Image (tube, rainbow, N blue to C red; front, side, top):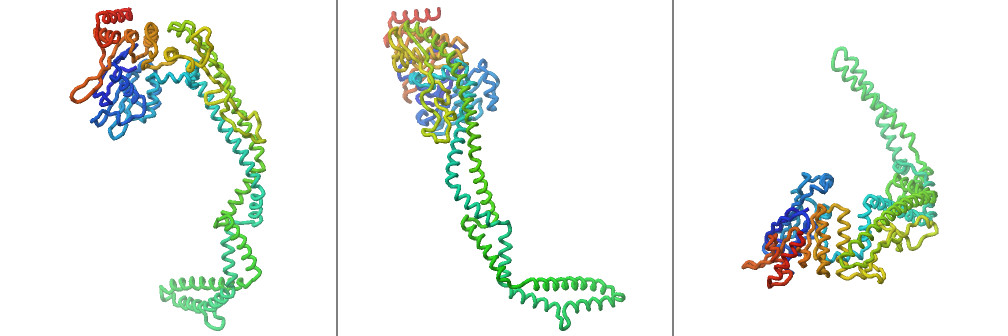
Length: 577
């Protein structure tokens, strides 16, 4: 719960530092005094969107900071999960906004993303404003009420995991059917392409070898002539040649090796040259004999290259390796087409299995909600009857969902009815409707459609009280929940809020009714002050005498009378009795 709230340079607030207390507290003040401003500042702590226009005129930044006592609410796991400092007791939440539009958020002095601040804020404070009465007409709100009371959190998470699995498997199944149908339309062309590549009997590296051979065959005569001349330069059968002269040089050097130390080494080196040149001559001769002009072979090579080039141009690639890869891909696609029925059958079975899990998990939710619905009905009648509705009737209607939430409008002939899941959404298979009648004879209808403003306020308060008993929410703020009620009904609503505050919780009510203000354990007043620098909003905790005076003003208006003061004193005495 909030121990203290500090606001600086926010709207009309220059600086505010107030301590708040456990239990039931009330905030009063004239319209326009700044109560909504304080709520707006608290909203920043809850991760709501910040607007630099909210910064007090002339200031460079605004700061909103709250100290929370969380010692009794088991938040250790949250702080450990997000690697935040926490001593098990106090938590400091701060939001800063600059005039340039930059916003920063801190939890225990650690900078955090706004999403994390919002996640924590939703677990710390519930602010109920008048517009939230519209939630009564929202199906997800009604479902949430039942799931909270049924403690369905884990069951709902399990269902949603199954539902997500079903949607994914259904999508894959439908896509496989569409792909198979399209592939069958293309099968003949794919098979033609695959056969064309297969008939080519392509081999990696073949293109380079063929291109080299084509070059050689195209210039066979020139190559052979050059080789013959090169061989003749080395070995001249008609006279002394290089090989013979090298051999003779080696012999001469060896004859003087006995008297010349260096001659032996030179002879060995020259002998190596002789051997190498002789080998080269032999290879040139061999190559020369192998080279011959072969028009038939040249035609074959050119035709083979023509096939390769045509395929490369057709498939927009540059290598035989890429053509082989395309051939493999085509064969795999054809194989997939041939086996598509088995694959589709497998996906459909997976979809059916996922659907079965969704149905079973949804059935568990429905049963738990039915049990919780009875508790809601009994509690609401018991709670609303003393609030001026002695003949109230309240019923939670749980029906199968009528709308189709996940299917196709048209289903192909390959579909099977048992694979399509209808009447389910992310919350299950239930459609919830809160039915209400304040009179014995009136027909029960949707509460948001038939209840008056005052009745809706009482219904929402009762629901909040019911929910508060099921969750450990540290702080609940009611912003004029008393709209449309007065007198003894307001007093009874105040007692409900007071009872909520006695359940180790902080309940704050912003009110204009003295009957509610009198029951607050603590009383704060919001007021405006004008000076030469402008108008500023302030809040102060009232003493007993100040409370009496404030209540008297709320009873009689601006002019205080002895009767109003006595009445205010009596209200406080009765409230504390």
